[in-house]
Image (cartoon, rainbow, N blue to C red; front, side):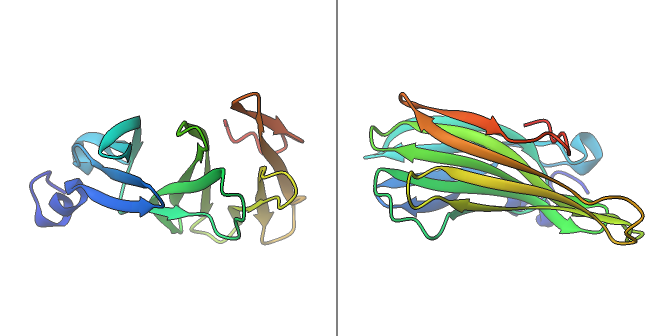
Length: 179
């Protein structure tokens, strides 16, 4: 794919998503799979009242989406994730989690990803939920072997807000995701 092809030019067009009083902009700064493979450079910026309060960079591929996490009653925290990649055989779809706290501080939490092997041997996935009691984000990663010749694995990661920052509590490290 050439950087100037019409398929990839759209990936470099700035996208916007509004989450309450915040505007999120994101796009790739360059896209060329021959040059960058699945590591095309991109950015995410968060604005409040037209003033940038946070920026982040990432390396990814394919379409980008920003989604606010559902089932959230906590008005002091807005959790959202940036997705890139394709969840398909031998391809990876990655989600990077963020949280905006009441003091307008944006926290980058972690990357979690999903894929399935082309031969149907295994699948890796994750699920997440926000605790209604304390507003913690919990992510459960799983590695499932379809032939059941190995034991399925899972990890639980809890992101807790303590003293104006998030702390990561990994209850196990069976999968070793690199977060």
